[in-house]
Length: 223
Image 1 (cartoon, rainbow, N blue to C red):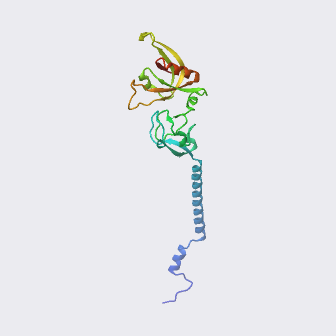
Image 2 (image 1 turned 30 degrees about the vertical axis):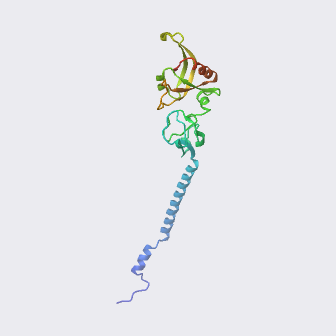
Image 3 (image 1 turned 90 degrees about the horizontal axis):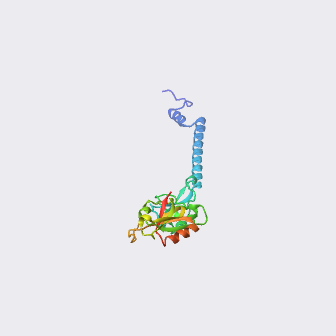
């Protein structure tokens, strides 16, 4: 058997050499790793930027009906992007403590200053600083069922002094009042079955309507 030439690589040497990465392969591998790390860094930076852009808003923790008085269990906070924040959004849950909901609110809906009853609500509804809120009990209780927050109505008093219902006269007390709140039905209804509507109107008209409700039945005309 001839002696093996020591300069001739063995089978094991050939396998090791084939598995050993060459300069070109190493360079390609390094570039691939560098590209992957760069993509990861860009994604992380973009994600971090979005997180930094988020703002806190107060949302409803459950469905709410008009007239509901808010408690801490009714609200929660949520992080949203700036493009999702409506004008007048509430950012602190404490700002809603003991506030009253002015309209139906769905779970997850962002609270705004126009969705709750506050000292600023009449001014927001009418756009004038002398706006006031007046509670009105309508003579026809069926009309209350038709009223919705934001409706614009004229307020009329009905003169019943003549006794003849067909000849009763109506006096326009105020025009363009805005419905701010309609009281929700209660399990135990009032003896006369009535519900109240809270109307926003200028201060002078508010005093006139408040006085008229003590003496005459009140009704409204929808716009």
